[in-house]
Image (tube, rainbow, N blue to C red; front, side):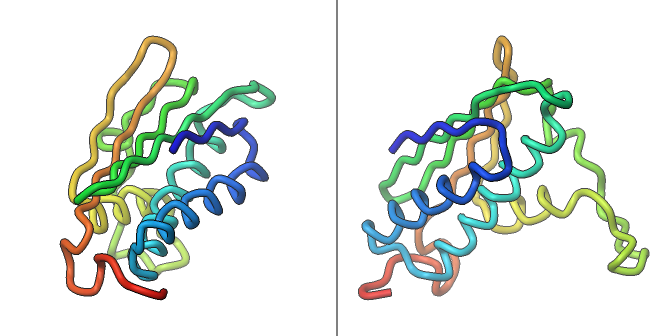
Length: 144
């Protein structure tokens, strides 16, 4: 499935609805759908908020591929940013309200089996891979 959105926060909801429908049609368990929705939302919000100078229009393309593993590929035309190298570390000693930055990449590393970043000519690509059923209760279900 291919989805393209403009770099606007209000465009994210429809993208997440497409993801939900795609995963539900393939019998992916509710908790896995939640996890993948969280990961995609985190990436999209951060890309839109920090990847484009104020007022710059852009496109974000999302490709979903199913199989024994779910692949989510996000390509943008934003400024160069490798979240695997450049995202701030979470200061775990700080009170929760003061922990700024790094939480999104923490989620990705925790929930995804593989994360790859590629700098493209004029854009970024991040690919998430999640094996369906790679953690207890995270695979497919019937009826949820």
